[in-house]
Image (spheres, helix red, strand yellow):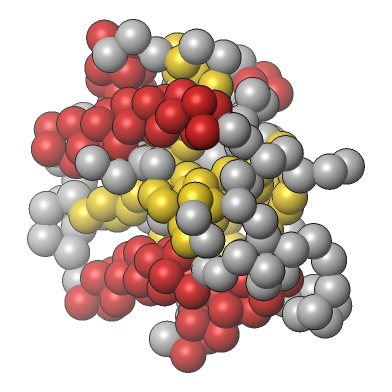
Length: 251
């Protein structure tokens, strides 16, 4: 399937949807505190996003029950909001999608709850730094597999490993479109589709400590590493404009 090339007016709509995600993530970063439940955090995110005029696009998507993926400590992605209470020293992944005027936004952060360990600070920094390094490395004409290799090389040089079998993705009039963007190289870097002006996609490094092999918990959603250790996840939605990547989900 061909990767859509978006017109400037479409990218402007995607940027509006993305900006509301960024505002909601910032609101949660400013207001989430120890003692809250994941369900309370999910409701805060949903209510705030709706107050901005957007629809929370994850709610009901593929059967997901929440509006915010709340991935606590060992959960890398797709954590279901439940009655778990967060406490000081935890790390919490928040992944939010929006729909506005038929176009989608999507971004994620991993945030500290109170004071966290130096090890957890390094873990979070790896996912965030890998994301910005990848965005800065994008050039028109390079292949998505080259981008995957850039992500993998950065992550492994920091002493971590990427989660396997999950990926970044295209986004536009659907929440998930072509291409799939792994955080590690499969095949050869000079294979597959090239990055072109007008493409819009999400890059999302998902970081594990010892093993990138995934385990899906009994809730059929929450993804953890088989090593049972803490993880981190960051995501931005970018558009390729005038031969460079422009972040659509940044305030």
